[in-house]
Length: 372
Length: 260
Image (tube, rainbow over all chains, first blue to last red; front, side, top):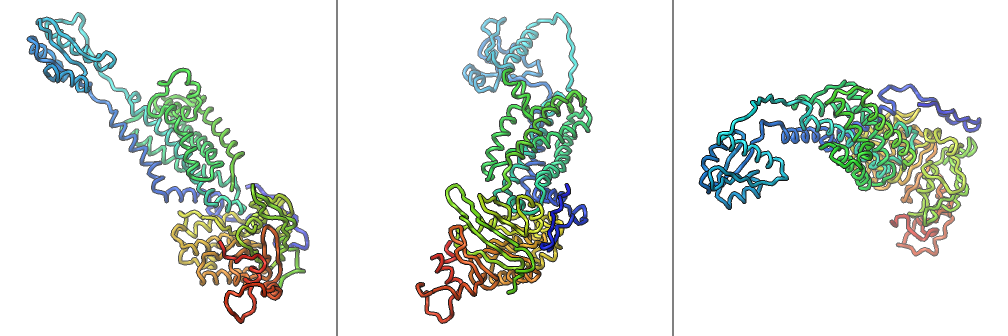
C-alpha cells in the first residue's frame, strides 16, 4: 500500500492524529481478508461450485463417450428380395462382415430408406447378372454403402482384385474429438468463471449497497478489485487441474507442450477474462441486467471461438473477426500447447491478443466503474 | 448535557449545502454545526433531505454547492483521513449473507489503521452468541446491530447513524442507546437520524428539524418543547403531561414523524 501523506494537524484540533498503519498480521491485512471473503462467498454457494468444477467434467465425460472411437462403422443396407437373383446377392453381401443386411419386400424397403434405418437399398435385377442401387447421393455414408455393397456383390459374382492391398489401422491420441474438446472446454470454463465470478458478485454488492458501504471505509478500491483476481487465480489452478487431469486420466488426452506454458496461458486467460468480467459489471445496477450483458458477450464466443467444433467451419470473410476474439486466441493457444506441443514462441501471437484484451477491458472498466 | 464548545473546532460544519437530483431539490441551503462530543439528532419526515445531508457529510455524495467540514477536514483534500476517522451506518446496506458476523467484522477491521478488537465490538452490540453465525440467518434487529458494529470497529471519532433503531425490539433499542451514551462519554461525536421522538429526546443534546432540505428548528429538545405552541394542535387525547418533541415536530411540519 502506498503511504498516505500525513494530514497537517493544527494545535487546536490535536484530538487524534491519523497514525500510520499498525503492524498487523498477514492474515489480518485487508488484501488477504478481501480475498478470503471472495473465497468464502464462492465455496458457500454450492451452485457456483457445481457449474465451475463438476459441470465441465460431466460435459467432457458425456461428449467424450458419445464421440468415442469405435471399431469400423457397420453399414446398414436393405435388400429387396422379390427378384429371382436375390438369394445370391444376399449371400454375397453377408460375406462382408462390415455390412448388416436386412431383407425387405418392396414397400417396406422404401420406408426403411426414408426413415434412415438403412443407407442403401439393393434391388437385384430380373436378369441374374444385374443389380440396382437406391440411395441418397448427398449422404456420404450412403455413398460409402454403395461402394461397399457393390464390392461385395462383384466379388461374390467372381471378380478378382487386380492389385493385392493390405491395411494398417491406427488411432492417434490427439486427433480424436475428445482431444479437440478438452482444450475448448477449458477455455470456455476460464471465460465463464471469470465473467460470472466477477460480474455477478460485483453487481450483487452494488445492488445491495454493500459497495457504497465499503466506499465509506478506507478500503483501497484497487485492492477490492484485485481480490477478485486473486481468488480467481486460486480457483484457476483447481479448474485447470481437474479438467485437464480428467481428460488425461479418463481419455488419454495428450499434454505434449510444457505444463508451465499451459498454466501461463490459463493465467493470462483468467486475468484477461477478469477484465472483461469487470467491464460487464462496471455499470449494471441489477443482477438481471448484468446476466443479459454477460450472455450477450459470451454467446458469440461459445459459437465462433471453436469450443465444440472448429472455427474453420465459418466462412473466410468472418475469420479475421473470429481470430481476434479472446476465446479464439485462448482455445487456439491451448490446443497448440496440449495437442501439438507448440513452443511459447509459437503461441505468442495468441498470447498477445489475450493480453491486449485484458489491458483494454481493465482500463475501460476502471474508467466506467460505478462504485455506488 | 455538557458540550465541549471551547475545547476544539466543531466536529461538523455545514454551510449553504445544496443538492438537487433530476427532478427534486433534496437539500436546499442547509446550515448545521455539530460540536465535538455532542449527540446531535437530525429529525424530519421522509424525503426531507436528512439522508442526502448525511451522505454528503460521509463523502458518499458530492454537493452541488456549499461547504462541509468534518473534524476540521474537507472531503476534497483529506478523504483518506476522513474515512479513517468516521464510523458509518447506512440505512439500506445489506451485508454479505454468506459471511459470519465475525468474518464480516474482521473484514471491516482490516481496512482501518487503528481498529478495535472484533470480539469487544461484538460484545458491545450483544451479538456474542451469533459470532459464528451467517449474516443471512440473523434477524432484522441483529443485522441492524451488526451494521452498527461495522461502524464502530474502525474506532471512529465521529459516528453517523442513519435510523439505527428502526426495526429493533425495545430491548435492543435500549442496548443501542447505552452504546451511544458510552461512545459519547468518551468525548466523541454522534450524528443520528431517527423517527422516534422519545429516542431523540433521550439521547440528543441538540436536534435539528429538517424539512424541504432546510433546518426549520434547532436546539435542545427541552428548549424546543418549551417554545412550542400546542394550542392550535388538535389534542389526540386528553392528557396532563406537557408537550413532547412529537408535538414540536407536528406543529412545525404538519406531519407525524412516522408517516411512511
